[in-house]
Amino acid sequence: MTALCASAALNAAVSSSAYGVVRHMRGDWLKIWIASHPRSTPRSTALGSPPAGDTWAPISMALDLMADAPMRVRFAPSPTGSLHIGGARTALYNWLLARHEHGTFVLRIEDTDAERSTPENVAQILDSLQWLALDYDEGPIMQTDRSARHQEVLASLLAAGFAYRSSATAEDVKAFKAEHGADRGYRGENEGAGAVRLRVPDDGATVVHDVIRGDTRFEHVHLDDPVIARADGSVLYNFAVAIDDLDAGITIVVRGEDHLSNTPKQLLVLAAAQQLGLGGERPLPVYAHLPLLHGPDGKKLSKRHGAASVGELRDAGYLPEAIRNYLALLGWGAGDDETVLSTAELVERFTLQRVSRNPARFDETKLRWLNGIYIRKLAPGELAACLRGFLLDQQGLDPDLLDRNPGLLEQAAAISQEKIHTLADFWPLAGFFFGEPELDRAAAKRWLGADGVAMLREIRVDLAGVDSFDTTSVQGSLEAIVARGSAKPGAVYQPLRVAICGRTVSPGIFESVALLGKETTLRRIDAALDRGF
RNA sequence: GCCGCCAUCGUCUAGGGGACUAGGACGCCGCCCUCUCACGGCGGUAACACGGGUUCGAAUCCCGUUGGCGGUACCA
Image (cartoon, rainbow, N blue to C red; front, side, top):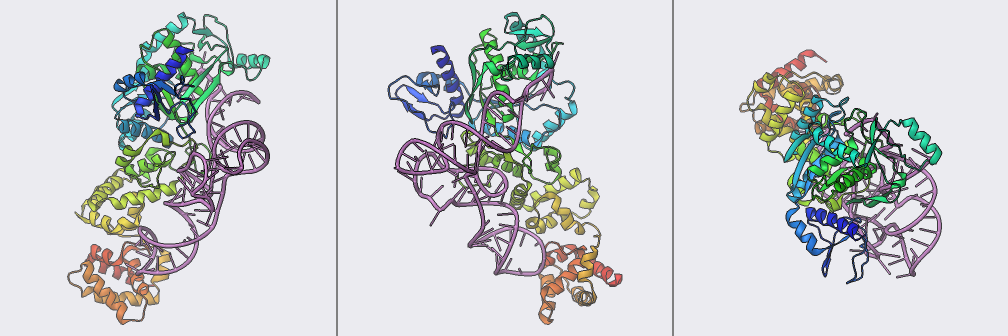
C-alpha cells in the first residue's frame, strides 16, 4: 500500500514537474493536479494528516524530480494514410506543450502494421508536419527498427509468465464470454504456441492517471488478456507503444481519446516490464487523452468531410499559422476571450489544464475567417510569395504567366488582400491581370446592354485621354463621368468592371484599371464593344 | 452486448455553489460605410439534454435516464 502510494506520488511528481504546475503546498506536502481534473474541486485533506489519495506527494521527492525530469512528449502517427486533421491537432498539442515547457518533442512512426504502412505515407506525414512547422527534437524513430528490443522484452515476459502463447481465436473468446458472462474478460491457457497474450490478473484494477479526465479505473476482471504479438512473433500496437514510450523516457503521453480504453493494457505491459527490471529506474508516463475531432455532421472525421487531411487544407489555400491557430482552438481555449492567437502566443499560453473534455467538430467556416485574418496581416510581398508558391505548386500554374510582368503579382496581391479568405480565392478574383479573362454571360447581360455599351463608349473616350494612368488619375477621370451624368456610380463602374475582368466582382475598380494599364484596359473595352450586345 | 469517455447558443468555447438577466468568437439577420466583393463599425438572433437528490441557494456537486462517441482485431 505504501509502495503503491509512493509510486503514484512519484509519477505525479514527475508529471507535475513537467508542467511546472503545483496547486498547493502545505507543510511538507505538495498538491499536484494530475490525479483529478485540475478544474474540479480540490479534495479536502486535513492539515498535517497523511495525504489522502494520490494527488499529494512529499515535497522533497517532487523537488528532486523536478530538477532532472524535463518533459518529454511524443507524437506517434501510423503511416497507414496521410496526416489527418485529428492527427495534426494531436501533433500540434504535443508540440505546443514541449515548446511551452522547454521539453523534448519526439516523433515516432508506428509502422508495425506491415500490411498497411507505406514509405509514401511516411514521407507525406513528414512533409505535412514540416509544412505546418511542427519540428521535432528526436526521431523519427521507426517502430520496426526497434524489433530487437521488442523481442527481448517479449521473451522476458514469456519466460517470467507475464505472457503466454495461445491459439485462441475470436470465436474462442466469444465462447468464453458466453459461458462466463459478457462482462468477463477472456482468460486463456498457455499452449506453448500461437499468438502471445498478456496475462491479466483477475483481481484488482488499473487506474489511468489522466491529466485531462482525472483517474479512470479499469477493473481487471472486465479486461481480456490482450494479444501483444502475432503467432509469427511480430509485435502489436499495445505492446510496442508501451515499450517504446518507456524506452524513450516519455513523461506524458498526449493522444486522442480513442486510445483511452487501450491504456490499461499498455499500463499492464509496463507494469510487467517494470517488475522484470526492464525499464530501468524510469517512472511510468502519465496520460492526457484529447477529445476527439468530428466532422461537421458530428460523425468521426473522414474523407467525406471535405478537407480532411493536412494536404487538402494546403490545397484549399490555408496558411499554416491559421491552421495552427484554428486547430489549437479545437479543444483548448486561452481562458479569456482571445481567439486570434499567433503561434508564439499559443506556445506562451498553452497548458493541458485548459484542454476541454468534449469532442469538437471541425467547421471550416471559422477556419476561413481566421485564414482571412492571417492573410490580411501579411505584408504584400509576403502574400505574393505565398501566392506564388500556391499557384505554382498547388494549382500547377505556368510560371511564365506570373513572371512575365515582374512586380505585377505583388501589386495584384496588395489590392486583393482584404477581399480573399484563402490563397485559392486569389486567382478567380485577380487572374484577369495575368491573362485574358473569360466573360461571365450573366454579368454581360446585366451590365453590357444598350445603356452599358453607351456608358463604355464614354468611358473609353475619357480614359484614352488620361496620361499618367495611375490610381489617382484614373479615379479622377471616372469620377468626373459620374459627376457630370445622372447615372449612379454603379452604372459607370460595373460595365467597365465586366469589360476588363469579365465578371461583376474584382478588386477596387480604380486600382484594377490602373494596374491593368492603359493599353490593356482600352483593348478590353474595345473587345467588349465589338462583341456587340 | 460488454467496458469506458462525454454532455452550455447551429459551431468552437467561458463558467468549477451566490458575481448569470449565462460572457466571447464563427455563422446567420439587420443597419452603417461603399464602385462590386470584401474589410471595418454598430445592433440583433440563439444554449445550461431530461429527471431526481444535496444545499438557504445548482449551469456548477451526487445519482439515474437519454443521447453522442470510443474501445472491444493475430489494426494503429
